[in-house]
Image: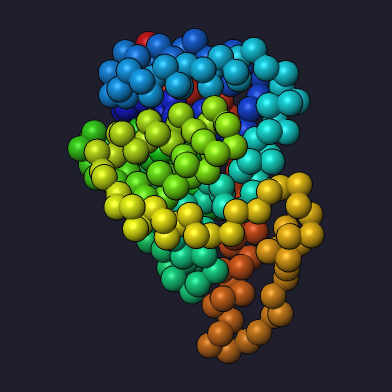
Amino acid sequence: MSRTFKALSLLLTYPNAELKEAGRELASAIAAEGLVPAAERQALARLIEEIATGDLYDLQETYVLLFDRTRSLSLHLFEHVHGESRDRGQAMIDLKSMYEQGGLEIDAAELPDFLPLFLEFLSTLPRSRACELLAQPAHVLSALAERLRKRGSAYEAVFRALVCLSCAQPSSEEIAAVLREPDIEPTDFAALDAAWEDEPVSFGPSAASCKDTLISRVRAARRPASDAPVRGA
């Protein structure tokens, strides 16, 4: 099991007291494996310090504003790949099947494309296979890192580290395609309402799009930080 992938997964989960206390252990796990370059490790250390020393309620509010209310920063990977298309539902099924074949059972409330869950799965695979799978959404990870950089968010470090781990070099065209998505600030309530406006329910061949819309609204259940694989290190 790669403790680096697991540690990065935990850093992208909703902040709680356990995550705050696990900071030193997470940093040690990342440093011990040496998979993340020094510059990215330093940036991750700043994020870990921010989580460890920050006010919990402030940390939680920041997380919600970034990843829950800002659609362009969604931690659901297929949001950036398939959007509301019909392909998203089948992609969810295929990814869930891959998890099951790898021995990872997920709760019915969890969406397979939730990035922390995807990283948890990668942590169970041989390193070469994990990097191969991580390379597929590398252009999405690069685009999210850029959006977080513009916001001055320390969470940028996690996405930069993931791109390094993927050993992929996404093209500027691929990254630009993701960056062309509307990037609405979470405090722009009118724009948010317009972006998340309910679509009319339809039946027949077009009904699949309704399913995809519902899928995109359901929030993945978060796994507690106490599940950190760094125990016993």
